[in-house]
Image: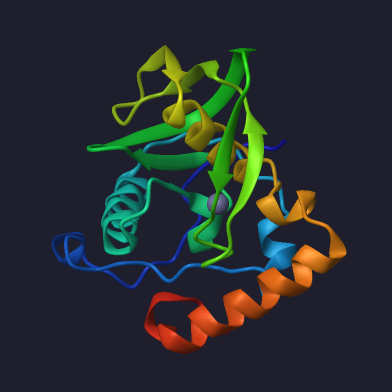
Length: 190
Ligand SMILES: [Zn+2]
């Protein structure tokens, strides 16, 4: 995994617009290659990165979602947001301990409309940088553990589609196509 020196993104937004602005979601299968790419560590929390995380927060709100990772909005950086009541930014996360099992009905903004039960750890300890760039080790349990694990998988290029059967993939592809047709403004269609 290589580090980046600066936030290598080109966003056509002004910081002052970011409350209303949102980023289009990259979806499977159209952006399968993009979503399968491993992300780079964040090394500088510069102005562009701050803008990115503000836009990720407004994007997750727009979708009423619980988790969103940077690659899902086109940026290959190890950053994600979880929102189980209040948005929390997680940067450069590493799972250092996991325990227990739980079955969660997994969904994904990049595979919109499709859900499938999957086994997740019941509890994880994550080493991370918070929004201010401060190192922390946080414990996540229950749904929060599953959401975190799902989003960290994205940073490693792993999506929920990887664990689907061929038959399920066909079903998922049809579902995604319908959602994109109904809400084209929310998704990256190029
Ligand atoms: Zn996802």
